[in-house]
Length: 297
Image 1 (cartoon, helix red, strand yellow):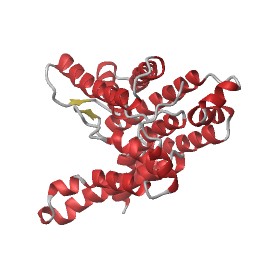
Image 2 (tube, helix red, strand yellow):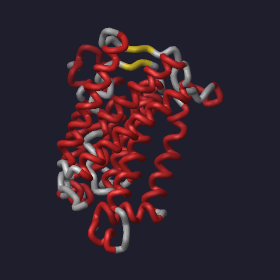
Image 3 (cartoon, helix red, strand yellow):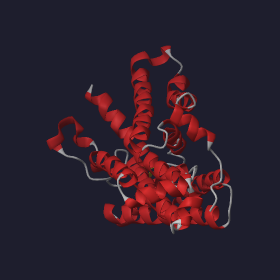
Image 4 (tube, helix red, strand yellow):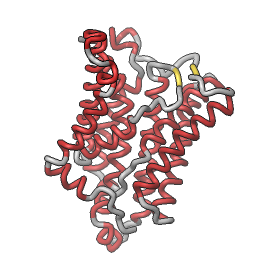
């Protein structure tokens, strides 16, 4: 039982961090399809900098800096150049996937996986069988609660909601909607960097090209499934993680009796199911009905 819970936490923690980034962007009126690109930038930067400097703190700082700068670029393209959010987000994802592949090949001369000598700090023996998990797993509930607190109980959260839902009304009372969106995307960049770092250095201590494998899009789906609420989106992300863990367990139990590709595809099947189910719920229907609409800036 513990092994299953550990597998869920390992796969679900990076997904939850990136989902929170999607939530805060959605609250600002931006449907963030660039989560995948930011996540893999964070993963790549973490492993490469650990390998080069031997410092986790420096690696996390560089990963956060790169993801924040990339988020500012995304904001400039969407907010100032008035580009379509969906196209710009997909472009950001392509930039992240292609850019990290190019970086690894330029530095190491091939696209082979890059191993780091060590990863993120572990919880340690005090946590028993869960001691192999990284410290970011322990901090994850605090980030979820902090996001709920930020969005629901602060002035910034109220301005963020007004920016996403009623930008004209927000500007009429003096709210700088462009700066609010910039702040939301920058916070999202930090969360994506942390999610990418957890994915690459939390348990694997390795980076390989395209290792995010669609997790950014799963996070985006979790935002829709959770109707843009941090708690609901977190549970949606955990649902996808549980399905993925059950798929791994099924491979061990059933072996060749069930097609291997089907078991590997379970998280993606669950993603499609989540989109369908969200269309049946009031919150999901409202979210999907606004999908792709460009907020006036």
